[in-house]
Image 1 (cartoon, rainbow, N blue to C red):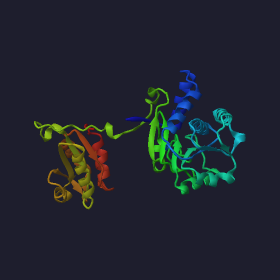
Image 2: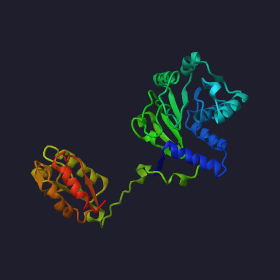
Image 3: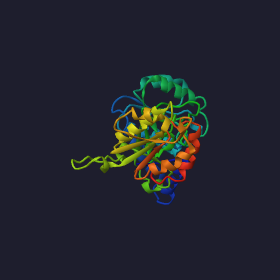
Image 4: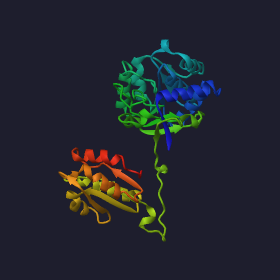
Length: 341
């Protein structure tokens, strides 16, 4: 399980590491650039697109590292007058080391056509407005070119906190983000632009992400209890499902079957009485329990019997196919007496 940070939380973690722990920003940047380089193809020309902020600074560092390894690389940026802070520092370092730098937009289509891979270091998680010309046009051209794209921290044009697309965004094959996953990379529609998400350690303490309200659940985090020869169905947990209504029993059936597939030894499905015979026909291994109904949905006074139905159950799935009528009051009544997860 990995902590997921918002842009504001990530800025705080960065600043704490720099100001309080004494790790220079240029050290973090060098580690970030090295991580990006490790995800690039080993051959072919690389076009690095750099913005004017910290994301662009990472891009200049990537280009410098590639150049020092005798890789064919061109660093493209368009706004030299507005380069600032670390971006200006990294630009000047790259320039002194002889990295090919290009800032003429008229050259961009030819440079894009001539490369095998693109590094997107235009905008990071701090983007707060829609991409404007020429960046929106650059994003559209990159998307149309079909090149292998590695995004730095987050694809340019994806909002770091919400995943919203800021007018236009670059589609990445791989997004290399640093220390913590960013919310915008995991929330739709940004997730569709992120490609494979690689979270790389650059030296920021993991403990700085513990205050996050979001986490990224991975396959390895899901426990699978091994079946033993001496075990029986009660050894692996009894799951409860409260779902379905007349005409929508399929939703409850899918939910109950999923509980079995997830590893529950026993699954009991509480269903409105009017839909019980239909529900029972779906799967012989699922036990069904009829509960009071009203117009084919759980009635409000079914909550007491549903609470009794939950005795001894290890977990409850509540919701699929309940409908929008009487079942709403049923859920409200039940909420006050549920004790299982």
